[in-house]
Length: 270
Image: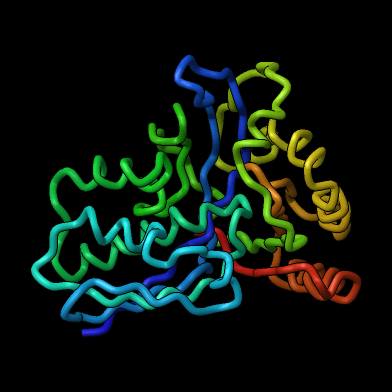
């Protein structure tokens, strides 16, 4: 048996930070979206659980036995062990939920091969607040610290998207610490497209203060009349949405010509 799953890149089409809670976490309102591309996981039945990491960004995982793939295997009961090869195509510490997306893909692999326990959401949440969202990998509004879910009309499904990262890792905690603490209001109401167009990313200013290259990426993405462009999560990856694949691909070629050292990925929203 060989099973393959894509760990879909997660982006925030809007990210509103409302307040800092007494437990140190921040109360968020965000529009989660997923791109139909990302890391690739291949699983085979084995004598014992094992994780093999390959790909361009494999070096960004310090301990392959302590990453979220291994941890996801550890919290899921199964009839057989699995050897999983993780092809790490997404940059690490990039605002794409890469580790959580990898864990979500493990849950889907185990679901297909063996089924999931009834409390799988609780098991997933123990690995990270956004891991349950990454198991589903569908567009929705995230509340709380990202673990609460609200449905949204997805009128952006199939929209062409371009992801760009200046190849600068950016740790999440310093970005949140740099947030100015001002509550600028809740997510707008409406469909996914309406929320994305009227929403904002409250962490952008803090992220740029730590990683100024983000501003350069956003400047490049602003050209070519995208539907919308913004930084994802706590950065440093930024994205742009387009009306057509032709417009997206033209932007990708232009940015690659001017900044061949930047990472890019193209896809469509799920």
